[in-house]
Image (cartoon, rainbow, N blue to C red; front, side):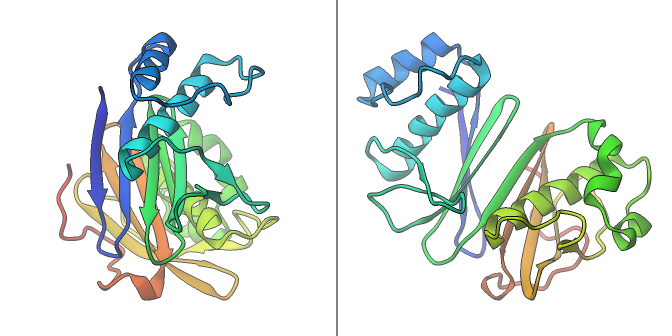
Length: 226
């Protein structure tokens, strides 16, 4: 079972990762063995990738909470489970599903597979100031900014905000190892952004600035690459 790990953060967040290598049949069988109901997965979900993500979400929830649970969403898109008051955030990309939990405050996470496609949408999510400090051809720096803004959008929880105009990130320096920490903003709210290179993925957490106990450096932090 490719449950990869539980990554703890200093604000109390835990991000649980699952590397998806199984077939749909494998995941269905695993759910059945663990007593997880899959009948609520809509029959309209025909794409294999999305169906597998939904199955892994259920498997991760059982690992996290110790019982079979189903993921729900509020009207503003925030994920939750009925049986717990924990704050949740969910993200998936090709080959990876992540669920983050925190007992005290809202959080947002995003995971993206490394690549250069993000360079083609630079003007759609970076404002003028951000384009000034993010090098034009630095795909990893662009992915850090992209995942940061997606995570900030989730933790802020307000619909209709623009990634380029309403969500802002302070200057940072991309690094190939360790944590990168910097500030992010949406409206009048300030957030700590903690991002890391996870093999062939970029994984980013956004959490209220007051909840993060360390200075935000805009560069490599103390924790090494996993």
